[in-house]
Image (cartoon, rainbow over the protein chains, first blue to last red):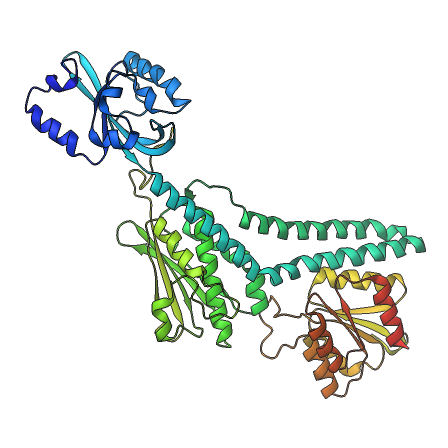
Length: 379
Length: 135
């Protein structure tokens, strides 16, 4: 090992070795050509190689294609130009174990100069578990969307059947007008048919975008627009039940970085619950949705209803899966809402409305002025 | 409407969906019925005292009107039938429904409906029903 980095770090080599050995994260040091100089015990465990098998070998052996094939070029590019793509930043990447299996990692890379020699230190953390949890959240959210859709099915059937009825009746009228020779009127009837078909298509479109299960990236969202989109989606329900949703949001709220579909799902669930509770109390008191800045970097959303409230003995179980007080409920709404909010780094809580009814609050991290919270740089 | 114009019995269409209302009116007019439309049971109730003939084509799902100014006691289709009967207004009624099936049909017939049709409507069924109750 005389040729490795270790002898160059002349001060306290033993402390360096102890650090490497004790590190929880895998630490790999490569030279400017990409050859592995250091491979700590955590790296041995993570990749399944003993250090002696990989020392002096090209680090690309720890990467799946196409990254393995590109790595030498990246290094050469950096050595020649000093333009960093990853150094000093860190990113998510894929790694490859000895047995050929691939796994997601968080990788941060730093540069160390020793005289004329240049080394790169990579710190690697296995994030498979986090990825699995994220995937689970996505699947759960999809299931809730489907079950919410089920609960809304009769409303949707009504929404589609109305234009369908109009289309069928217009068409039948048109045939009779034609038989009578009243062809002058036909143009306007055909226009009306087309308009109703578009109305039905809009319902379908809305429904499809609601259940679609594309993996969405996190994106920027404005609280007011977010709330408005959900209230708009619920227009049929509010109309049918004669319960108004009042949007009480201040003008200036920070932008959020969220999975919009998932958070829409949370809002939708809470608002539907609020309307159910209001209806159960035989009331037509409006449901209120509010938002405000909380602390330094959070936005707090609040859904208030003056409905039947939650009985004291049920409050502990509110967020327990498959607990429900509704005849047709699945008991998955609130648990999934909470898991989605938590995955965004926020909290969802319940408290009784002082005047009777319920208040559900949840927080979401806001974007901080200089830079982006919780976002890793993607190339 | 003058008295002279009311000589031919009218078909009164009550439906809160503008397109459905308009299409039914057009269909009935295409076979020379005289049609008058109402967007709510309340609007029909207000006009009802002067009505002595004709028939009613009535949507069963008449939710709260979206204008929000409907106030208390806005009746649905079946409730309208009961109110008409209470006031002694005997006009034959055909109830139309998006969903509800047998239970709603039974409820409508009990409230005095002359016929019950599911939406989307078949023109032959609707026109036959209108023809039958107008006799």
